Amino acid sequence: MHTLKYFLYIEGLKQSGGFMKNSKASAKLATPNTLGPKAASAITFVINPLIADSFALYVKTKNFHWHLSGPHFRDYHLLFDEQADQIFAMIDVLAERVRKLGGMTIHSIGHIVQLQTIQDDNQAYVEPQSMLQKLCNDNKNFAQRMRDAHQVCEDNGDVATSSILEVFIDETERRTWFLFENTVDSK
Image (cartoon, rainbow, N blue to C red; front, side, top):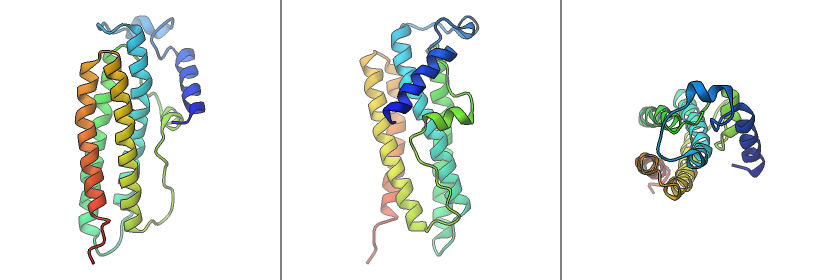
């Protein structure tokens, strides 16, 4: 995520009580945990953009699933659908983890847009090989962002979120691998 986006994100969290400190929501949404507010804030800070990227990658994958055409239609259609389901399943797990830590998570589509680093694809038609390449790159970059977040979790002693991310990194690397293998020239 760009530095400006991170800055705006932090400012928004401060103003909205997203760190669950000094806000009207904090009393009603406070969640007991053993990590402490500083660790919870750091983890919330790195997980919320992953949730936004999960939404963005899910929609992009479904977009390609719906608008696919060509000789490999059935194979790619099923692959994209399977991958989209896997990505969608990540969202609730990550958001609930943020809430367990006492943080606030995604509130709206506008909030997703503020935090996402995965670019939307609004083209009317994308060639199937280009779809595969774009999703391969997006998943590869997403795995790296999860690794970065994993380090923050480890630095703050959050083994539970670290463990969740380890599973999601593995799933994302598998998606990347499958997408990549479909782009390899068979000649």
